[in-house]
Length: 88
Image (cartoon, rainbow, N blue to C red):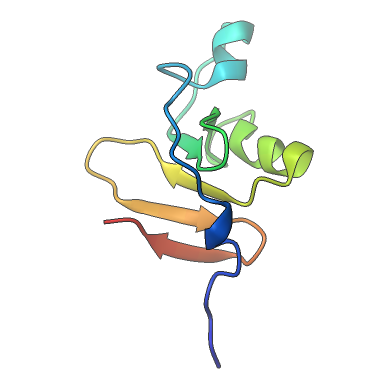
């Protein structure tokens, strides 16, 4: 069975808009790890964080792929296909 991501064509050259989770910074809240949307550059917190803003961003926008925004981590997750992708 081919387990290929069908959304790679939606990856764009993006730049992080903030140094931390955009919504958590506005709320004065904290996060565990950060994810960057590869369609628009939104920075959101991971699902281990209380607010899960990266997943909420996907549900709100349908931007399917987010990459880890942690130093030394080179992977991405396709929410739509539920697949881990290597970015290196």
